[in-house]
Length: 174
Image (cartoon, rainbow, N blue to C red):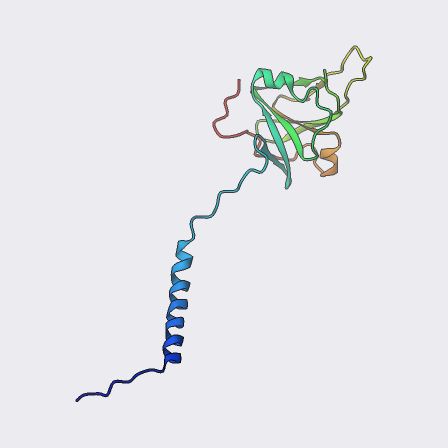
């Protein structure tokens, strides 16, 4: 038995074609998305150190020369930027403010990432000859310098844990 051929009106064909196109787009386009993008470090050369949800973008001082230079000769430091000093061994540490132009805070951090001490370090006056040493009360592996008052402003105290403090992957401490 032959059936008569049925022709759809042009508007019905257009609607069917549109529906098919939308259906294809909904199934194909999501598959075209690549993997989730890797977060971008918007502060090249700096590494995030986090304490109780607060980030300090840190320069890394992991060799003798960079540890000795530290933050000397800087007339300012952005609010959320500091310097993380990484020492090759766990031991008592002491800092002084030779050639430092701004007051700083320092947090001494042990091997487990726990803050041992937080000290305020005053920039020397031009006529100051003897500079005080700001010493850790226990052996430490790390020291984090920030703008003066940064730790207090963020409610950070000794005993709190620091994360991200080991430096970038592949770091060699000398």
